[in-house]
Amino acid sequence: MDITPIYILRYFVVALRNMITDKFSKTTSLLLVATFALALAGTVSAVDTKPIGENGLPEFLDGDTLATMTFFLFFVGYIAMGAAFVFFMSERNNVAPQYRTTMTISALIVGIAAFHYYYMRGVYADYGTVSVEYRYMDWIITVPLMALKFPSLVGKDAITDKTFAGLGFTGICFTGALIMIGFGYAGEAGLMQPVLALLLGGMGWAMIIVATGTPWSSGLGVDNDKISSELMWSANALRWFIVVGWIIYPLGYLFSPEVALIEMDNGAELMAVAYNVADIINKIGFGIVAWMGAKKATEALAASE
Image (cartoon, rainbow, N blue to C red; front, side, top):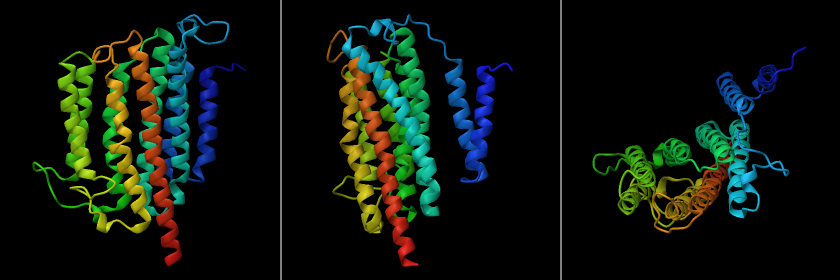
């Protein structure tokens, strides 16, 4: 028998489909199978173009501690996001139906990030280049999803009807995310003056904070009084991530070679390290605290029946 990578991939997908169909709905099962199939298809088709050293790593990493750290953080990011995706999907049916959407969103965030981290790792391993494009492709999808965790977790009753510039909660968050990511990319790609891009991008960040609130106050779009006590801790933890955890991103931006606000020979690697650490903390952390709140609320519902 000819054991090719495609044969192995096909065999694994069939086995995975049979394994998960009993645990998840048909739709969820198909999504899981498709996700893993795409991930494995990318894996078996990848080609290493850089010479490999005696330690099994690309030769350009030899003797360069920061480059090695950057490479491993891309790898750790890919594996951590993928593991988080499996965890959130496996826990989806262990929470009450009203909280399953937030678990799905959590899985989407880290699943999308895992794909992009796989390719960013590949670009760095093959060419020694930190990809800005893959990074922003990831963020333009996952950042709005992170903001949408609020209504999916706290419930629509806690979302107010207040508007800003004619935009409701969802509109403010999406517009803020587009402004933040769009101007960030413009600054890093050399399309506009980097300090101006940083300031304008910060306005988008501020819009999201105004909509979701802070750990010590309600937001324009979220009424703390209508958030259940079981979910209040998780809601505030999500706000801490947005207000404090996201500070790491502009710090990484300062090291970008195109921005060069802090000029260093290895600025691209320092930027990548900051971004990778921030992504691992914020994206996985976002999902974990939402899961904790959903589990606590589910237990409270079960106890009240």
